[in-house]
Image 1: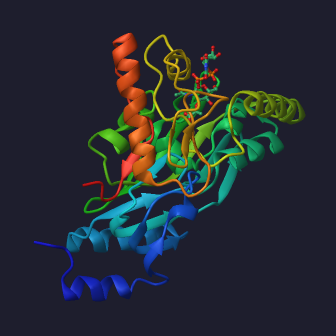
Image 2: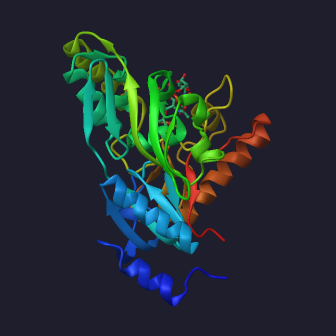
Image 3: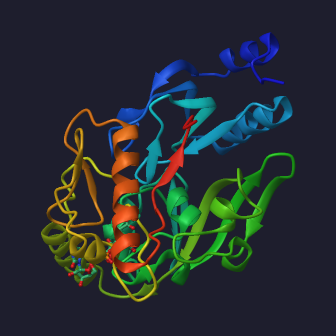
Length: 305
Ligand code: EPU
C-alpha cells in the first residue's frame, strides 16, 4: 500500500517548517537532483526525532541529509520526507569535543585548533558534516574519523535514544552500520572525538598546507561529489581511470575531471542520469582493461527506476 494516504499527507503538511516539492539540487555539492516530496530543515534533536518517529509510525519513507556532499539524487527526486539535519552546537570538554551532527567537519577542525587540540587536522579536507562523516567513516590523507571517535549519540525510530561506540558502528573504509548494516535509517545526533593537547597555531599551519595541497590535486572549486569511487585495495581509482584514458570523458554537462580521474564535475545543468552513465562507462572501461570492479563511493538516492 502506498504511504500517500490522505491522513499521512495531512500529517506531513503539518510538520513545522515543512515544504512540499522542494528542489534539492542546490542542497548538494554536485548541484544535481530532483525535488523532495516533502522537505524540512531541523536543528533541535528532539524535533528531528519526532519527525522520524512520525514517519516510522506511518510507514512514510524518509532520508536524512547533511551537507549533501556524497550524494547523487535521482532526477525524479526523493520519495517521502527529506530531513536536513542542522544541529551545529559544539562543546570542548578537556581534550574531547562533542559536536552536533549538522556541524561541518571543516568547521570542527578549526574549533579543535582554536582550543589548542591536535589530531583533527585531516578533517579540513572532509567536505561534509559530522553526521555524514560518521555515516561513512570519512577521512582524508590516510586518516579516518574512527581513529579519533569515542562515542556517538543517536536515535533509532521505534527504539529511542542510543549511545554507540565505534565498534557498535562497525566503521570501516567509507562504511558503517548506519550506511550498510543494522543501523540503517538511524539518526546521528552528536559525536564525541578524543584529541591531544598541542599547539593550535601549528595545527592551523598544517591545515593551511593540507588545503593548499588538495587545491593542487582535486577540482575542489567545481560542483562535484568528492571521490566518485572507493579506492580498490592497494590502488587508486583516479590512477586507474586516468590509465583507462577517461579523463575528459563526457556525458552532457557531466565530465571526468582532467585534474583528478576520480572526480566528476558538473559543468552546469548536468543531470543525474548523465552522471550515472559516466559512472557506468568508467566502471565498464576499468573492468575491460584491468579486470577490476570499481565500487561507487557516492550514494545513489531517490527514484532511480
Ligand atoms: N592519481 C593519478 N591520476 C589521477 C588521480 C590520482 O595517477 O587522476 C594518483 C596520484 O598521483 C596518487 C594516487 O593516484 O599517486 C592517489 O591519489 P590522491 O593522492 O589524489 O588520493 P586518492 O586516493 O585519489 C583519497 C581519498 C580522497 C582524499 C585524498 C587525499 C578515496 C576514494 N579518496 O584520494 O577522499 O581527499 O585521498 O587524502 O579514498 C573523498 O572521499 O571524497 C575524497 C576526496
